[in-house]
Image (cartoon, rainbow, N blue to C red; front, side, top):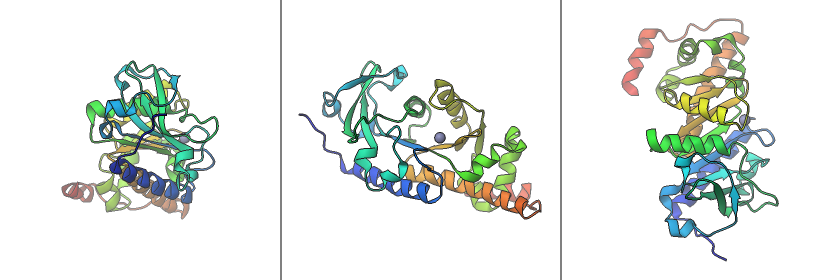
Length: 264
Ligand SMILES: [Zn+2]
Protein backbone atom coordinates (compact mmCIF):
# COMPACT_ATOMS: atom_id res chain seq x y z
CA UNK A 1 0.00 0.00 0.00
CA UNK A 2 1.29 3.47 -0.90
CA UNK A 3 2.24 5.57 2.12
CA UNK A 4 3.61 9.05 2.53
CA UNK A 5 6.71 10.39 4.21
CA UNK A 6 6.20 13.82 5.69
CA UNK A 7 8.66 16.54 4.68
CA UNK A 8 10.67 17.97 7.60
CA UNK A 9 8.92 21.34 7.23
CA UNK A 10 5.56 19.63 7.72
CA UNK A 11 6.88 17.79 10.80
CA UNK A 12 7.91 21.19 12.18
CA UNK A 13 4.44 22.66 11.56
CA UNK A 14 2.79 19.65 13.26
CA UNK A 15 5.00 20.17 16.34
CA UNK A 16 3.56 23.69 16.61
CA UNK A 17 0.04 22.20 16.46
CA UNK A 18 0.82 19.96 19.46
CA UNK A 19 2.30 22.86 21.40
CA UNK A 20 -0.64 25.18 20.71
CA UNK A 21 -3.18 22.42 21.52
CA UNK A 22 -1.55 22.14 24.96
CA UNK A 23 -1.93 25.90 25.50
CA UNK A 24 -5.60 25.81 24.44
CA UNK A 25 -6.35 23.01 26.90
CA UNK A 26 -4.54 24.72 29.77
CA UNK A 27 -6.49 27.92 29.13
CA UNK A 28 -9.83 26.07 29.38
CA UNK A 29 -10.48 27.11 25.80
CA UNK A 30 -10.81 23.55 24.48
CA UNK A 31 -13.27 21.62 26.63
CA UNK A 32 -14.16 18.13 25.44
CA UNK A 33 -14.16 18.12 21.61
CA UNK A 34 -14.30 21.92 21.29
CA UNK A 35 -12.15 23.68 18.75
CA UNK A 36 -10.42 22.70 15.55
CA UNK A 37 -7.16 23.47 13.80
CA UNK A 38 -6.15 23.22 10.16
CA UNK A 39 -3.28 24.13 7.91
CA UNK A 40 -2.89 24.37 4.15
CA UNK A 41 0.10 22.14 3.32
CA UNK A 42 -0.42 22.02 -0.45
CA UNK A 43 2.91 23.67 -1.28
CA UNK A 44 4.88 20.98 0.61
CA UNK A 45 3.69 18.05 -1.53
CA UNK A 46 3.89 16.98 -5.17
CA UNK A 47 0.68 15.72 -6.82
CA UNK A 48 2.09 12.25 -7.46
CA UNK A 49 2.96 11.87 -3.77
CA UNK A 50 -0.58 12.49 -2.54
CA UNK A 51 -2.70 10.87 -5.24
CA UNK A 52 -3.79 7.23 -4.87
CA UNK A 53 -3.50 7.03 -1.09
CA UNK A 54 -6.50 6.05 1.05
CA UNK A 55 -10.18 5.80 0.15
CA UNK A 56 -12.08 8.69 -1.38
CA UNK A 57 -14.90 10.07 0.78
CA UNK A 58 -17.47 12.21 -1.08
CA UNK A 59 -17.67 15.83 0.13
CA UNK A 60 -18.95 18.98 -1.52
CA UNK A 61 -15.94 21.32 -1.39
CA UNK A 62 -15.81 24.78 -2.97
CA UNK A 63 -14.48 24.21 -6.52
CA UNK A 64 -11.33 26.26 -5.99
CA UNK A 65 -10.18 23.92 -3.21
CA UNK A 66 -9.47 21.13 -5.74
CA UNK A 67 -6.01 19.63 -5.19
CA UNK A 68 -5.49 21.18 -1.74
CA UNK A 69 -3.57 19.17 0.87
CA UNK A 70 -4.92 20.10 4.30
CA UNK A 71 -3.91 19.14 7.82
CA UNK A 72 -7.06 19.09 9.99
CA UNK A 73 -8.29 17.86 13.36
CA UNK A 74 -10.89 15.09 13.67
CA UNK A 75 -14.59 15.30 14.42
CA UNK A 76 -15.38 14.43 18.03
CA UNK A 77 -11.64 14.36 18.78
CA UNK A 78 -10.30 16.15 21.83
CA UNK A 79 -7.77 18.91 21.09
CA UNK A 80 -5.83 17.94 24.21
CA UNK A 81 -5.04 14.63 22.46
CA UNK A 82 -3.06 16.56 19.83
CA UNK A 83 -0.32 17.00 22.43
CA UNK A 84 0.86 13.40 22.10
CA UNK A 85 -1.64 11.50 19.92
CA UNK A 86 -1.54 13.69 16.83
CA UNK A 87 -1.87 10.80 14.37
CA UNK A 88 -5.04 9.56 16.11
CA UNK A 89 -6.84 12.87 16.61
CA UNK A 90 -6.03 14.57 13.30
CA UNK A 91 -5.11 13.85 9.70
CA UNK A 92 -3.74 15.23 6.47
CA UNK A 93 -6.22 14.95 3.62
CA UNK A 94 -6.01 15.47 -0.10
CA UNK A 95 -8.96 17.04 -1.93
CA UNK A 96 -9.44 15.45 -5.36
CA UNK A 97 -9.10 17.38 -8.60
CA UNK A 98 -12.90 17.76 -8.96
CA UNK A 99 -13.30 18.98 -5.35
CA UNK A 100 -15.94 16.28 -4.89
CA UNK A 101 -14.12 14.06 -2.36
CA UNK A 102 -11.15 13.81 -0.01
CA UNK A 103 -8.83 10.99 0.93
CA UNK A 104 -6.84 10.76 4.16
CA UNK A 105 -3.14 10.45 3.33
CA UNK A 106 -1.70 10.61 6.87
CA UNK A 107 -2.99 10.13 10.44
CA UNK A 108 -6.67 9.59 11.28
CA UNK A 109 -5.64 6.39 13.03
CA UNK A 110 -8.66 6.23 15.30
CA UNK A 111 -11.62 3.96 14.60
CA UNK A 112 -14.36 5.72 12.57
CA UNK A 113 -12.15 8.79 12.22
CA UNK A 114 -13.44 11.68 10.16
CA UNK A 115 -12.27 15.28 9.74
CA UNK A 116 -13.96 17.99 11.86
CA UNK A 117 -17.54 18.88 10.96
CA UNK A 118 -16.14 22.40 10.38
CA UNK A 119 -14.32 21.04 7.28
CA UNK A 120 -16.43 23.29 5.04
CA UNK A 121 -15.44 26.43 7.02
CA UNK A 122 -11.76 25.50 7.07
CA UNK A 123 -11.55 24.58 3.38
CA UNK A 124 -13.43 27.76 2.42
CA UNK A 125 -11.07 29.92 4.52
CA UNK A 126 -8.03 28.22 2.97
CA UNK A 127 -9.43 28.91 -0.48
CA UNK A 128 -10.11 32.55 0.47
CA UNK A 129 -6.55 32.87 1.86
CA UNK A 130 -4.98 31.30 -1.25
CA UNK A 131 -6.54 34.13 -3.29
CA UNK A 132 -6.39 37.12 -0.91
CA UNK A 133 -3.74 36.30 1.73
CA UNK A 134 -1.51 33.47 0.43
CA UNK A 135 0.84 33.92 3.40
CA UNK A 136 -1.89 32.72 5.77
CA UNK A 137 -1.76 28.92 5.93
CA UNK A 138 -3.13 28.16 9.40
CA UNK A 139 -6.63 28.41 10.89
CA UNK A 140 -7.32 27.98 14.61
CA UNK A 141 -10.82 27.91 16.09
CA UNK A 142 -11.23 27.75 19.86
CA UNK A 143 -13.46 28.91 22.74
CA UNK A 144 -11.62 31.79 24.50
CA UNK A 145 -13.59 32.50 27.67
CA UNK A 146 -13.50 36.28 27.91
CA UNK A 147 -13.93 36.88 24.19
CA UNK A 148 -17.05 34.69 24.19
CA UNK A 149 -18.39 36.65 27.18
CA UNK A 150 -17.76 39.88 25.24
CA UNK A 151 -19.85 38.50 22.35
CA UNK A 152 -22.84 38.52 24.75
CA UNK A 153 -22.26 42.17 25.70
CA UNK A 154 -23.97 45.11 24.02
CA UNK A 155 -20.53 46.30 22.82
CA UNK A 156 -20.66 43.40 20.35
CA UNK A 157 -23.13 45.49 18.35
CA UNK A 158 -20.58 48.31 17.96
CA UNK A 159 -17.45 46.75 16.49
CA UNK A 160 -15.43 49.99 16.36
CA UNK A 161 -16.10 50.74 20.01
CA UNK A 162 -15.46 47.14 21.12
CA UNK A 163 -12.03 47.26 19.44
CA UNK A 164 -11.25 50.70 20.83
CA UNK A 165 -11.99 49.59 24.39
CA UNK A 166 -9.99 46.34 24.03
CA UNK A 167 -7.02 48.04 22.31
CA UNK A 168 -7.07 50.75 24.98
CA UNK A 169 -6.30 48.24 27.74
CA UNK A 170 -2.57 48.02 26.96
CA UNK A 171 -0.21 48.86 24.09
CA UNK A 172 0.53 45.22 23.14
CA UNK A 173 -3.07 44.52 22.16
CA UNK A 174 -3.02 47.39 19.66
CA UNK A 175 0.41 46.41 18.29
CA UNK A 176 -0.08 42.62 18.04
CA UNK A 177 -3.74 42.54 16.97
CA UNK A 178 -3.48 45.62 14.75
CA UNK A 179 -6.53 44.93 12.59
CA UNK A 180 -8.60 43.97 15.60
CA UNK A 181 -11.61 41.77 16.19
CA UNK A 182 -14.55 41.21 13.86
CA UNK A 183 -17.94 40.86 15.55
CA UNK A 184 -19.15 37.98 13.42
CA UNK A 185 -22.93 37.44 13.55
CA UNK A 186 -24.22 34.14 14.89
CA UNK A 187 -24.36 31.26 12.43
CA UNK A 188 -24.92 27.58 13.10
CA UNK A 189 -21.79 25.41 13.49
CA UNK A 190 -20.58 23.41 10.47
CA UNK A 191 -22.70 25.34 7.95
CA UNK A 192 -21.66 27.12 4.75
CA UNK A 193 -23.24 30.25 6.30
CA UNK A 194 -20.64 30.19 9.09
CA UNK A 195 -17.84 29.79 6.50
CA UNK A 196 -19.26 32.79 4.63
CA UNK A 197 -19.41 35.17 7.61
CA UNK A 198 -15.91 34.12 8.72
CA UNK A 199 -14.37 34.88 5.33
CA UNK A 200 -16.10 38.25 5.47
CA UNK A 201 -14.43 38.83 8.85
CA UNK A 202 -10.92 38.10 7.55
CA UNK A 203 -11.29 40.72 4.82
CA UNK A 204 -10.77 43.37 7.50
CA UNK A 205 -9.77 41.83 10.84
CA UNK A 206 -7.23 39.51 12.52
CA UNK A 207 -9.78 37.64 14.67
CA UNK A 208 -13.32 36.54 13.88
CA UNK A 209 -15.35 36.52 17.10
CA UNK A 210 -18.23 34.12 16.46
CA UNK A 211 -21.21 35.49 18.39
CA UNK A 212 -22.09 33.35 21.44
CA UNK A 213 -19.73 30.58 20.31
CA UNK A 214 -15.95 31.16 20.02
CA UNK A 215 -13.19 32.79 18.02
CA UNK A 216 -11.19 31.96 14.90
CA UNK A 217 -7.91 33.34 13.61
CA UNK A 218 -5.83 32.79 10.52
CA UNK A 219 -2.09 33.43 10.18
CA UNK A 220 1.04 32.08 8.45
CA UNK A 221 1.36 29.34 11.08
CA UNK A 222 -0.56 27.90 14.02
CA UNK A 223 1.61 29.67 16.59
CA UNK A 224 0.88 33.10 15.11
CA UNK A 225 -2.86 32.33 14.90
CA UNK A 226 -2.70 31.39 18.60
CA UNK A 227 -0.93 34.69 19.34
CA UNK A 228 -3.76 36.69 17.77
CA UNK A 229 -6.31 34.86 19.91
CA UNK A 230 -4.18 34.99 23.05
CA UNK A 231 -3.50 38.74 22.85
CA UNK A 232 -7.06 39.65 21.79
CA UNK A 233 -8.46 37.63 24.68
CA UNK A 234 -6.03 39.29 27.08
CA UNK A 235 -7.45 42.68 26.17
CA UNK A 236 -11.01 41.39 26.69
CA UNK A 237 -10.04 39.77 29.98
CA UNK A 238 -8.45 42.94 31.40
CA UNK A 239 -11.45 45.01 30.34
CA UNK A 240 -13.79 42.62 32.12
CA UNK A 241 -11.52 42.54 35.18
CA UNK A 242 -11.91 46.31 35.50
CA UNK A 243 -15.67 46.03 35.12
CA UNK A 244 -15.73 43.24 37.74
CA UNK A 245 -13.74 45.44 40.12
CA UNK A 246 -16.45 48.03 39.68
CA UNK A 247 -14.67 50.69 37.64
CA UNK A 248 -14.50 51.75 34.02
CA UNK A 249 -10.83 51.70 32.90
CA UNK A 250 -9.30 55.02 31.84
CA UNK A 251 -7.76 53.30 28.80
CA UNK A 252 -5.12 54.59 26.40
CA UNK A 253 -6.28 57.80 24.74
CA UNK A 254 -7.00 57.94 21.01
CA UNK A 255 -3.76 59.94 20.59
CA UNK A 256 -1.78 57.26 22.46
CA UNK A 257 -3.35 54.54 20.30
CA UNK A 258 -2.47 56.44 17.11
CA UNK A 259 1.11 56.91 18.35
CA UNK A 260 1.44 53.10 18.58
CA UNK A 261 0.72 52.67 14.88
CA UNK A 262 4.42 53.25 14.13
CA UNK A 263 5.12 49.80 15.65
CA UNK A 264 2.62 47.94 13.46
ZN1 LIG B 1 -16.51 25.96 18.41
